[in-house]
Image 1 (tube, rainbow, N blue to C red):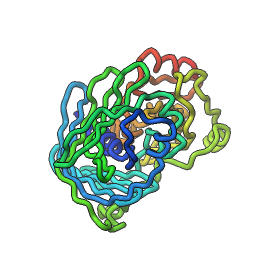
Image 2: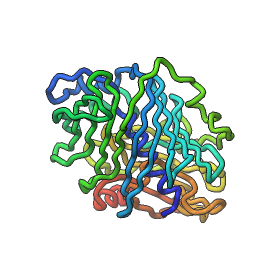
Image 3: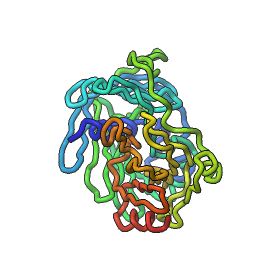
Image 4: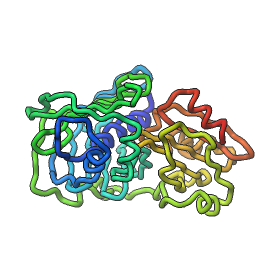
Length: 334
């Protein structure tokens, strides 16, 4: 298995640990207002935690020890301290997510595909999922509330263990659309801190200069078409419950491929990504002939199913953890 695939998979795990913030628990299913509060409330705790993250990819299990550092209100840093990802660091400085890989000797920006942590996702999250408290447990020696997120059809999506006293997430299980456990992160120790140095969350903390920005600011579809010089096409079909979340320019960090249009649709928790690239024999977005296949990271959620095709000299890639029929229905509607 290629190292970059492992990195992509485990970035998704580390990012998942940052989805929910402290909330007030009432022992009832969370309403839209409760979800909005859950997403909006500021994380007041700065802390350091050690634990283990496990991912399953193509039938293989990848286990790594991690150190997770959170700086209130919205920054984090994940350090992988055991093989096969020893030395990899993933960080969020509050505005962008970056990754340092000692094997590549560089820091790169990462495109995130999940919904932003804000109340704007609350109505989508509430409309597409049931969020219930499922009892209590103990993680890292602390009492934790167990939160379960399921689709309205009853399919389990996530389980979260939340510290009753501090609201800090101590354990997370992430399930794919086939109900298979995709990843698990669990802490075995947590230390609460009065403050954390800002420098820990900066790209320069790894001692290497960052590559070019890989994701531009969000814009309209027409503005994206104008910026890229070709007509960006939205899918005519998107599964029920999803809506357009952002339109951005994606640029290969090595500058070897044309810039791509990046459309992201979300249902409040999961996402569908559509990449559109002028076809100049560059291959699908994320495949970089200058530095080896798959060296250009599209997103930390790239382990989702993929449909790719070329039409009218434009290469299209649709990525999402959804049923193959739905994935191809989206592709056929472009």
